[in-house]
Image 1 (spheres, each protein chain N blue to C red):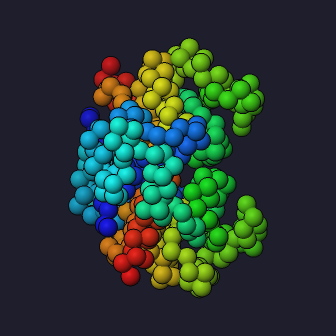
Image 2: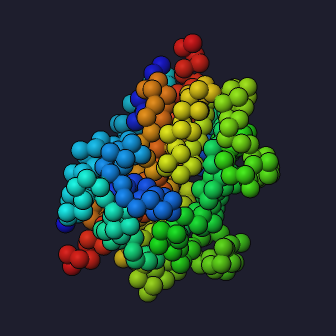
Length: 209
Length: 209
């Protein structure tokens, strides 16, 4: 089964809603209820979930626990994933301290920086390593996911090291477009840019008013 | 001047690179150097910057300090913006502790939650208010930017309150598609979804191998 990024995003939303419903001890859920909660169309939801097999029960909808389990397996959430984090500045530190990743099975087990004041120090329970050791350390730990949280000017170099170390997926928080071979799954997140979009929007809106 | 989201994203990248260059006391920069650093094309960069006026000097490129100043003004980064944060769970707390926002002029001055154990408590220097007080508090403080960091099942309700309070821009971290009038500038960030895309990718890749 080969799923597109768009479908994966929706499955990812369903699985988290189902976890919320499970916590509230809800046993079944209809596609109409899922539509109400997610904002997607009823038909869209049924189509997505049909990709995973015959899961709905006519008249009662979906079994919350079972659907959650099936989705978790498809999304690889029933497994643990090792993650390498490069850069423990403001953002890197916040990511390291954020428990949401570990809760979903993503364990940051190796942390790198080029700042001599940080190397060798314990950061949220992990000893920061010299970025020069990245290739060997990541390769020997067989880490397949990397997070880049370094300044823009260093991001391309770090990406090249992660690639050399055998990493297959990179989440980039540095504000630039990293160049990588297309078999690498690269995703970009830029928190500050989202807010800058707002300030630009409001600034130009105020001028027009 | 009405800028598209795509152009704003690129300007946002340029301004941060220029800040890095300024810190390293670089005085001028060519579009070729900016292309090298950002991964965008040389011609694209010149075209974007031409939108802001005649800024380049033939033969020497752009004055780093001046270009940084012009871009900051266009993006509204020379001003301070008040921000309301709703939800101080794991993610909300991390966002509140992250100094990157304040550094760029985005000040979280009001924080809301519905958890009685949190309301009235001091969170990173700000007293958490009852989400029931959101509309009045946000309206009287004239806050125009809101951040939603609540569970998916509460996000739509919170968005409606922010809208009622007069907020014009919403950054949503909850995993669902919020419905809002189109004059509201809504942007979505889902960190866990990015990682779930990876685990799904790797899971299905492993199966194929």
